[in-house]
Amino acid sequence: MRRLLVLFTFITIHSSDAQEMLSYDQYMEWVRSFHPVAKLADVNLEFGEQELRASRGGFDPIVYVDLDRKRFKETNYFDKREGGLVVPTWAGVELKGLYELNSGTFLNEEKRVPDNGLVAFGASVNIGQGLFIDKRRAALRQAQIYVDATKAERQQILNELYLDATDVYWTWASNYNNLKVLEEGVRLAHQRFEMVKESYILGDFPAIDTVEAYTQVMDRIYRFQTAQIDFFRSTQVVNTFLWDENEEEVELLEGVYPENVLNDMLFDYNKESLREYVVFHPELQLKDYDIASTEVERRLKAEMLKPVLKVNYNFLTENIGDMGLSPFLENNYKAGLTFGMPLFLRKERGNLGFTKAKLEIKNYERDLKFVQLKTKLEAEIYNFETVENQLQIYFNNVNGLQKLLDGEMTRFEIGESSLFLVNAREVSLFNAQVTLNQLAAKRKTAYAKMLNAAGLGFDEQAPQ
Image: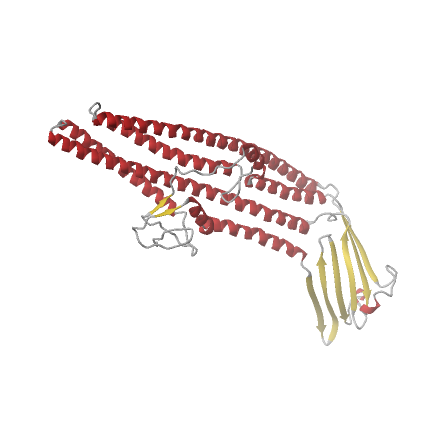
């Protein structure tokens, strides 16, 4: 695996000593551009396009040639040749054109044509079953719906990818801030230990104070090493979201760090608009498209209840130039009527009833999904606002603990406090700072979850 520094400008850095920040926007742009799941979502659109292309093939003109010849004992029994073009149309009318050239001693009389052959132009029209919809038109309409469904499915896949990537990034940023907080704790503990040791040598502090100072150093080193493990693990998870343009994995250098999780971030949204926008959620759209496809199936099944009534008409001529000389349905034509209908329609009624029941189930599922999405959105809105309030409270808490520590240090310097109280104040402050970092990350992830619950992705603007 190559060791690359990932930047929005796609610069490669090979020095492990480099200190470069990978911002959230740069990271998300990289995920959106090269992550395999993002590419998979784009490929998903191809399924819809190819399904639509295949269904349009049902309306492709068909050229055909039919040759049938028999010779026996030097006798030409028959020689039948027919070629033509059939053009299905969206209106359900099938246009036809053909040329016949038949001969032979034992040729069926109805197949006899003039010596130069016979040209026919005509159409077949369903005026019963298949007048408004048939299998070809149903397949095309369902394919068109499927194209829209693949777009909604693509958006859903991307939304989940962006949410996972966001959660991973801010966890990484929180762990990095925690690492810095605990690193500072180790530095201060070392500094204080050296000060206490020197004071003990001078006779200002008892020996027990050096032991207490040393145990603080050991405890903080342990916590710092634990934070290093957490940061390393979160970095490895971040690496799983980073790929390059050649579809190869990318690994961050040791010097790459995230942006400060405590930095301000624009939370621009409107609760009422989010509640209205949830009707466009990709999951709900997929339900709607499924219902629309089933409705096309229902229409087709209902069409099967009608009798088969098909009218055929073909104008016949030896010469294409003579087509306008013969009155319509008076001479030189071939016409027919086909009729058929099951007496009890049990199969057709059963199929229609089954499809209606399936449609009813899908409508219930859609209504349930809508309620679930609304409920989830409300929960995420409440969660975001609560975390935002918690973060503000903890900001004030950290500021208060900092003042207490400053005050305790002043008292310690003038001999009115003890090392134990100073350490206690300092530990409380570090714990609060760690919690503050975690809350800041939780708030930014909660904002992404709230937008995701409304059906919005990373690259979409929250409705105002």
